[in-house]
Length: 114
Length: 114
Image 1 (cartoon, chains in turn yellow, purple):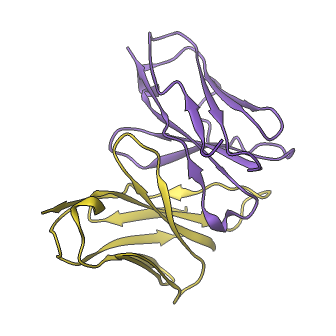
Image 2 (cartoon, rainbow over the protein chains, first blue to last red):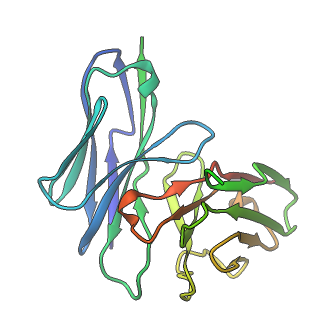
Image 3 (spheres, rainbow over the protein chains, first blue to last red):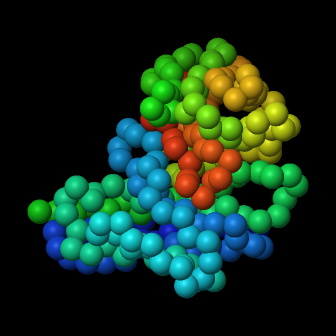
């Protein structure tokens, strides 16, 4: 069964304290892995797509990396405005037809204190 | 429009009533998705529309749930005989055929069944 697990569930950092969020996945095949940011009361906002092991993408203080079993979202010198829930999702291969179904993890809620 | 629009933003309904949720995707996006997000949980896939292809309904939790889409425009998600366990945020997303750019989500409809 395709599955996505994120850790930790919650993370509290001081401003400037770098850290990483983990996304472990089990799929029969991977079309792509997505990272989203979700603020309270809003829909998820797209951050990155990764397709193959070894790939990295960066945006401001965020860098996403991918291996065959997991992805990391590295946050360098975070600021309070980085506080949000970060969601990881996989788009598995297989199934019938050209489904666009994503499988989401439960998210990591990040709080950055000034 | 500039983004994915969902209405209503909030809906409180009595158990046993039917509700209809609306999603207006980004113009030109051929794919449309509905997800459900229960409090403190990850996003749960419900249904996927792609152009004129048959929709992927594999995530609909029961026959009380149904969805329609007219061409490549508005979609409605209908829940009949609502139950308390239907309380959740219902999120709609759309994407161009190239899903490598990620989905664009609406802000969701918060459904509360009392």
